Length: 317
Image (cartoon, rainbow, N blue to C red):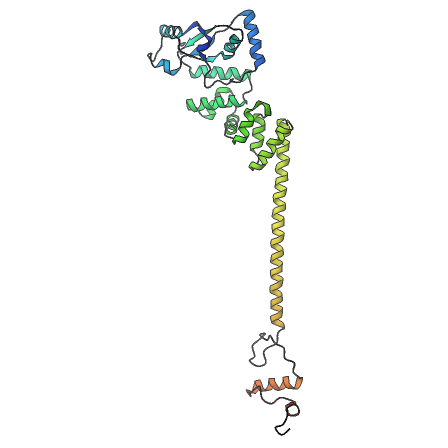
């Protein structure tokens, strides 16, 4: 069993108290703070705030601080980091208290941070942006894996993985998420991130903000948007395919027509080239037969043809 770390309880000025970097409740409900302030005004401070000195202060002390060292630090004017009890500090400020009772520890151990995280799991929405950012910072600072963070706060590893992925969302999403006036929550960001393109993400985001959509409504909007996008993609492909098919059919038809023209052409009566005639000569049947016979016998083709005696004038005419 591990020994209880040393601590001292003292009253310190409010101005010396600073929030930790991993504070998971930096944005607190004002009504809740006022309620605690009223309770503290009636009954006093029932529980001491837990604090520890910053690293810069610890540089002047041995590694293992004892109770006397802690009393010396408490009596000094150095800043102290509030590990648990910042809301009490804010409530004391509202009540115009000058001091707050604190329990000073040597440092913020992992157990102390875990206790804060577990406590805040019960008090606030762990899916809040600042909460997730605090968990991410804690994970980075301690080197803890997502699985270890999940085990610490009693969540599934996939849940923590989705949280950290949401923190890496594009700026146009995270800025809206951090702005309380937009009513954009982690659930909205999670659904929007599943959309395949930035244009679709922006479209659904603007819709959620403009109409104050719930997470469930945003999920339906995202689904319908993706379906419409896929239909348009399919329509575009079908149009391109139809155009390509039309071009192919026209090319095929043209090729067939060319083949038919070649097949319809008779052989040249002069040289015999198959299907290469391009000029039709109007000749009578007798002359065509004469040209064909001359070609077969090798006689000159441009000699006497039928009807030449009657058609050609004589020299004495």
